[in-house]
Length: 184
Image (tube, rainbow, N blue to C red; front, side):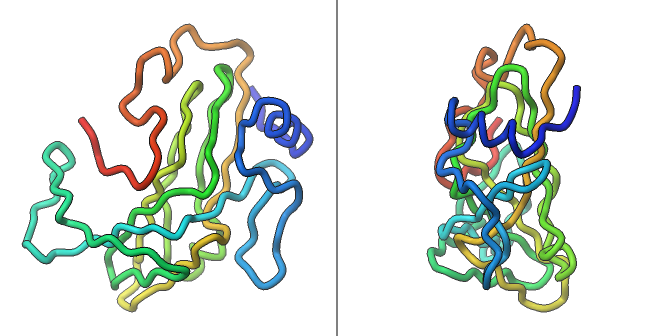
């Protein structure tokens, strides 16, 4: 199993619509970069956010999650409250091949500002837009820019296809679109 290079990513994006929309080069001028890189693809964050709030003094329980723990927001910039987080979705739709797993990692520009995205695994056979968990680890408000780079996806191809893919298992986040809350 090895990490896949830009030429493989480009080919898979064009021939199998693995990334849609696909940006052929890396866009950098005046924005947080996005598009293809040497061994990955920098995805963008969309403009719809769910900002975590403690308005109802809710206990955070991933098995019984309350949708009213978030405030919906749409805009070109999102302010994350101190020591809090938002959920957002990627601009790009990703279609993972049956023999490939992806890792989503936070861009260093945000990490250096105290804004973090936990590592997320895109399993073989998974399809959808990525729900991004964006945390502000600072004691100050932090800004996220919609339609700019937020994370990088690294692609790892297995030596053979798996017996049972995420699609075969009918995974609970298969074909997700929009900002998706935790599911059991």
